[in-house]
Image (tube, rainbow, N blue to C red; front, side, top):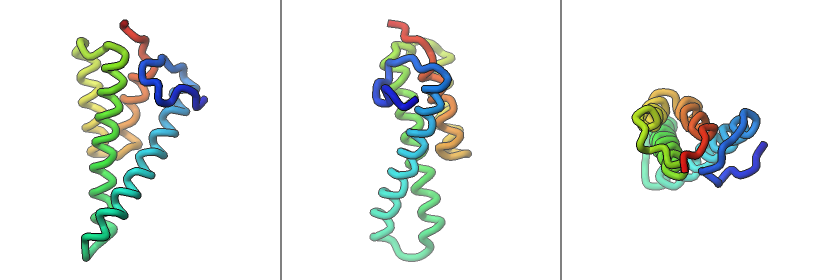
Length: 115
């Protein structure tokens, strides 16, 4: 279920895609917590709202970056539909965080490699 998590050119089946989703959702949460805690050392005031904004920013960057990396490794960037999925992952991360943004990313990981 959790094999080949860092092999972005690998075509995953449904079970492996669920493992990919869970692993990178946890990765997003850990990175957001570390970045939020580090940056909050320099900020005074409402830490909760600041943490939410840092978490959202980290989710957008991670989901968009992962989608772009998977598409590049699989040679799918020439397809308009794939480019729209990459953009959709960033937009969903903007509104639903890592939970939503990783859905198109996970779908892209199940696509076959074009190379």
